Image (tube, rainbow, N blue to C red; front, side, top):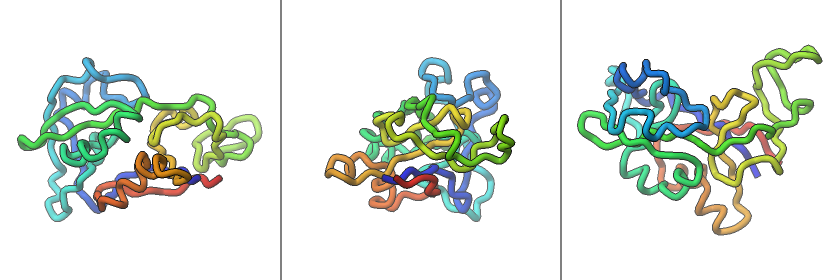
Length: 188
């Protein structure tokens, strides 16, 4: 089993929600439901860096990922098993903001993990997590308390056919979707 941090691919255009949504108290993706809190069908726009292509999966508002409608539909089982999809539009085209809801509050071994600052008494800035596998959620995508729910992680388990079918990493690679990259952070 491998665990990856899911990161935006900066060679593609980024996306930003309209200011009233971005500036709202609810634009925070910390594993709490945002359905009914963010406006239904808000609008967003692509960055003005037109030399960069539009991705299949965009980094939205410096906080989360957005999936084009056809991509969200293809990955629906994986995404709904891990969070919620919130509809919005870009130039009249349907997209979905992905809010990861699955999380673990005790998923890393602090003694084996690496930090920006670790003086024995204080640990700050988790850089390399050492996961406790028994404490991870049983979903393909998740966040952890130890990094303040900022990084989206995905598990890469291929023991059974069901594992492969519900594997976000495999689905992205298999379909050739653009806009995300994977940084391996743990292997067991």
